[in-house]
Length: 98
Image (cartoon, rainbow, N blue to C red; front, top):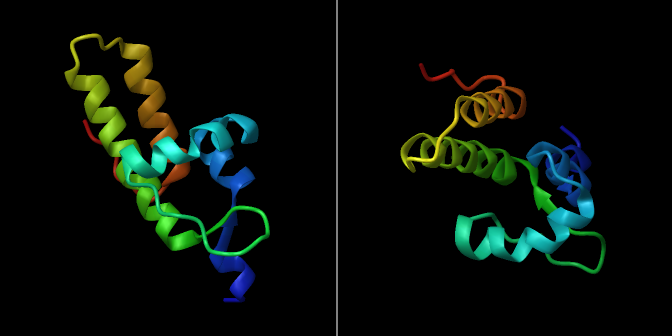
């Protein structure tokens, strides 16, 4: 696999989260500090990450968000289904939880 395929840029991370790139850029620090998102690769270019690290983080982040939605007492069925669909499309190999 070429090195470029192992790198993911901010626009693609934003898309995986269902956000715009500018919104993701504003929330990036919060995601790193409060939600365990990996730090970007060093350099002066656009924000870039190792794809494997972001894929693992997205899987974990989506699982935690779905769990939070299901246990916070303010859940509605649409939010739960939306989170599950998001997980299915971000991580198609992840099994759906019943």
